[in-house]
Image (tube, helix red, strand yellow):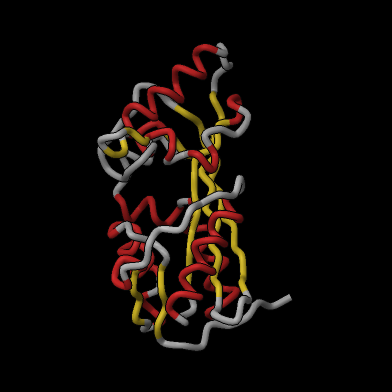
Length: 204
């Protein structure tokens, strides 16, 4: 069934992350939208209390749409490692939290040490997930899910990208996400997969 089409000229992106806003604005460039972030409206970050990517993306999208009256796009994404039962999953960012801010080298080391503790066989399979929710002020939403499969490598390689990118090598590629040019990664990533579905569902 075809989803609801986006008809306005202004879209709110439920993020306070400048890099993420840039990436999303770039992907939506052909549609001549005014893309604003939650930070521009001084919106608080809602509590992500769900245990699924869809649940948390819905909280963010609906909270933005209710607060501003604008159609709102939110994403929730994370790394899922097969031998760890899908962890860190929705807690991907939480694994990096410290009182001083996020420490992703620490989070990547935790992933590897937990795999080592389990003597998990190689290749250590993993996938990156991205769930996009487009919510309207009337409460309607559309959901799009993207995924890219690969494996965890150690030690991490590359200083491009962010988060766990240096330890994730996508299937069919020899470079990690941390070694790939940011825009090259954006063409094949889990977010790109979800965005293709979003564009098809809501913009074409």
